Length: 190
Image 1 (cartoon, rainbow, N blue to C red):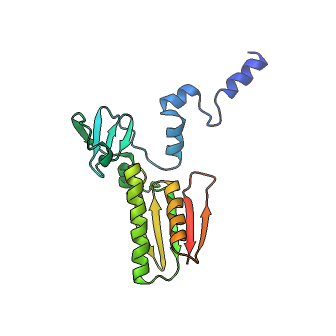
Image 2: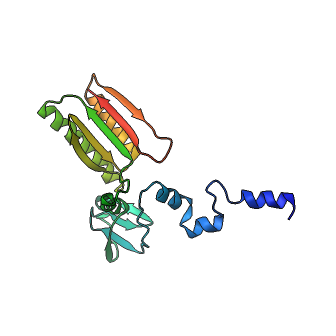
Image 3: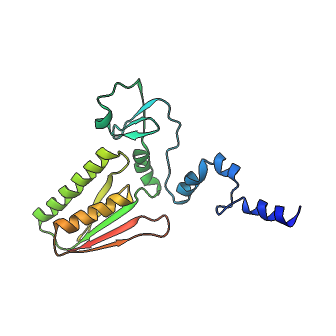
């Protein structure tokens, strides 16, 4: 082999160290990246129309739709399965990362104020899920004096943080984006 051919052969593997053929056999670059981050993606073959048994989202035309959007359409017989987010939530117990955004609310909240904030978070989550069934609030937890909210989409976490900041004047909002596959961290202090 000449020097030129050796360089071309070595460069064809790309940054991941896999050849194009190897990437395609593993489901493409994105699937390899998702598996490296610890998130388990539901790659089950989906043909026709599938209804998620967890959240009732409908799979057709190569992506998930909200059931409210497709209820007026007459769709073919539906198979039952799990959407990617419900599958990911089921994998949470096995130690996989099941969220892409983490919001931490610090401060002393009166019970009524806390309920208003949580109602705002739930409403934002419902609107996002209606628009795209894979964008949702995964979990809300209380640890000590802080409230932690986990979302399946990083942009949803940022939107929730900004809306809480706008609704509750006088707080401090800090957004930390990750340079790796870790979730975005939104921290709001009262």
